[in-house]
Amino acid sequence: MKIWYYAKAGRRYGPTTREAVEKLYREGKLKAKDLVWEQGTPEWLEAGAVLETAPSPPSPAPASTPAPGTAAETCGLAILSLCCSFIGLACCCGAPILAIPGVILGHLSLYRLSQNPNLKGREIALAGMIIGYLVIAIALLGWLGWSLKNPLFTGHRHLL
Image 1: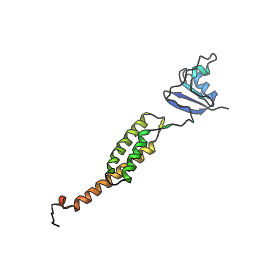
Image 2: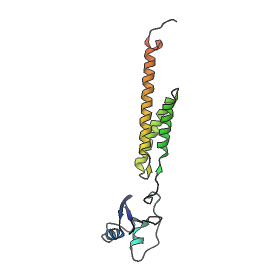
Image 3: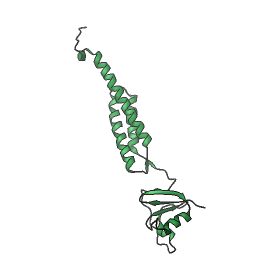
């Protein structure tokens, strides 16, 4: 018995059986333009083309509906976020400034991930943001500590 999936209004349901999909189609809960996918087939097809007795030529599924089991693409902004934040962490001389783009890219990638469910990389984006925020906090604390001990900032001018 093969596994079936169906998609309505951009949302995927399954796994299920052909009989269950046919029942949904007969009851009108699955429309002719809704998409179905059977295990072993290369693409999603319209339910009307697959389930009716006189099938019409199938139309391919939109590119935004990948077949189950296919690898999702990782969001490039999430990877850039993590890279910028790591470089900011690894290099202490002037590179903490790279943590700021790391945080910004992390936020942008989370937004992009919320808009496209076919992308993955939420954990990478969160890691980039967390590391970026930590690097920024450490840099600010270091600058604050340095400025409190520096005579130029404390008002005490000592001659050497």
